[in-house]
Length: 301
Ligand code: SF4
Ligand code: SF4
Ligand code: SF4
Image (tube, rainbow, N blue to C red):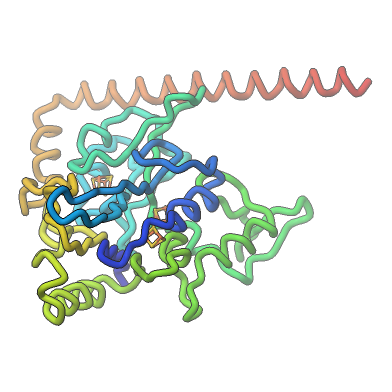
């Protein structure tokens, strides 16, 4: 089943519950972010219509493109379009090369500027969180393991039983279905998670039945070949700052055409340099960890 998210801006009251839930489930600081960064996968901005005086809150997040340019540009396969609909990110593969940032037509992926081992982060449609299962058990050290006995990781972190329970609570909606944390948290049902074709039909139904309440466009349906995040609005998407001049053909074709022109040696060198960079960072991390451990032992003795 392919999933999607529908954001109806006419229902949004700007309460921030979606943004707060996203920050909480990812262990990010709770701040009222108005622009995306590596610790804010979704944001809220207020638009005040100068003519009518009405207010519209604008949510922003990854569009989860059907054919994502970010994934096409990623040389190490850290970004992937899944059958689930989500474009996922693999913490163990990302080398922070930033090609995805250049490729994304919506300017979504963001770099971890403040990190010693920087990677590029973005909304994952809570893919890993939605796949954490209730029946996963816990090993002797207190970490959750899957049926094969492998520790379960979310965003590259091994999770405890307490975290498993929090994730389950935050990604289960009132109908008992697994859903993104932002949609579960939304008190107005302005953000809905569901099956893609059903959400497209729902968006079209709302416009058809209330033609005076909506701009007659489902944003995300055609942009760059279609996405898995849709928006409805009563104000033109252009005035709200959405990118409205995007082509309707998928961008990966172009990414590949550009990559095909790059000689293999350059791509190979790019991956090799990325690998060297990653290994150097890992070494630094291990060295710092070892130093800290030694200091702790000294302090105790
Ligand atoms: S919006 Fe950008 S980051 Fe998100 S899937 Fe599309 S290309 Fe990738
Ligand atoms: S789908 Fe998940 S990761 Fe994306 S904005 Fe919502 S809560 Fe955050
Ligand atoms: S939780 Fe729902 S109503 Fe509140 S800001 Fe987010 S989308 Fe809008």
